[in-house]
Image 1: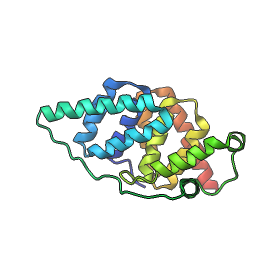
Image 2 (image 1 turned 90 degrees about the vertical axis):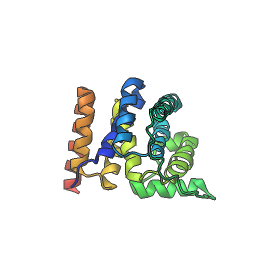
Image 3 (image 1 turned 180 degrees about the vertical axis):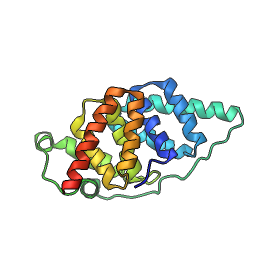
Image 4 (image 1 turned 120 degrees about the vertical axis):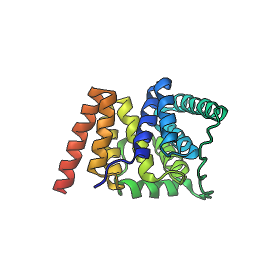
Amino acid sequence: MSHLTEKQRNVVRITYWTTLGDLENLRTALAKGLDQGLTVNEIKEVLVHIYAYAGFPRALNGINTFLTLINDRQAQGIHDEVGRFATPLSISDKNAYGSQMRDKLTGPRPTAAYAKFVPVIDDFLKEHLFADLFARDTISHADRELVTISVLAALGNVVGQLKTHMTITYHLGIGKEALADFQAIVENFDKDKGVAVATILTEIEEEIELS
């Protein structure tokens, strides 16, 4: 088992403050992320992924904060590493691709009640979230899930979704020690939200041991 890397810890911090719209703390987290090895394109990809769970307003405010920071750092003579761009990918059937990607991440499962009730939302999930976003390889699938659980933890009151995505994150290789690091970061920001994450983590550990 391994702990979160410093880069991953900074992904959690950047995501958390972007989700809450706390731009002062976000700017600090962004600067720390750059100083500790995140590239400009990796951070851009984190901010883009956030919108799928926290909405365009929070993501756009985060992007604007990042742009201002980059400009200020350039004016100070700081030249941050741009990093790699996403590999161009042509997907002929995004619905099918997204369905396969979701199954890869979560395992095959019956059609959810919400998808039967409002099928178009399931199409959007498959075609945009699991195709358009997850097909981009600037950051890994594991780090995308780390972004996702950071958004959900910051939002609060989304226990089912947070447990589902923490479980996915675990199966993508971010194990118990790393998830404990994640929980500690959240608890440092908000004790109640940290306790909620700890409760879910205990449930996941018990279920994995029983399986």
